[in-house]
Length: 170
Ligand code: NI
Image 1: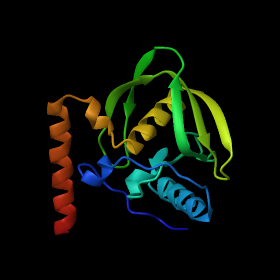
Image 2: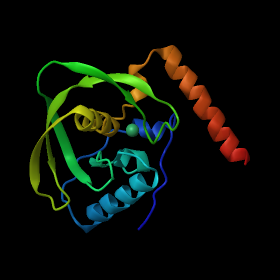
Image 3: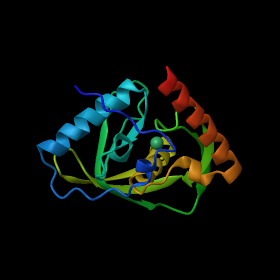
């Protein structure tokens, strides 16, 4: 079990576009396991490799109530099912203690590789669909604050910078 350090906004490394995984090998599986440990430890429901400064297209997620259903998505792609978007309050392990409503597609079809490199397809709606879109954004270097007004985004940025300064001084 290894806990990885999570990058926090406004760290520029969160803006990196991740590279596709060519082969799902033991190294990728180790990354997946470490990311799951890190996500559960941080009490998150999703984590993208970008957030742990690994710029490969790997996402882990668990939206179950008792955190018993880990989902691994390697090279994820999604297609919206319908045009309906719905705002839902979103948080992010890279932007702790900040939440904002972000509109996302209500339902999506996900295609990805699992932990063994096997392709799978999943129809998702509600929280899972929302989470898939949020995590996919991370792989593209996009954060939920990018959907907010510049004013709101700046306010969060300032609070985060203050937090990092306090952590540094401690
Ligand atoms: Ni996030």
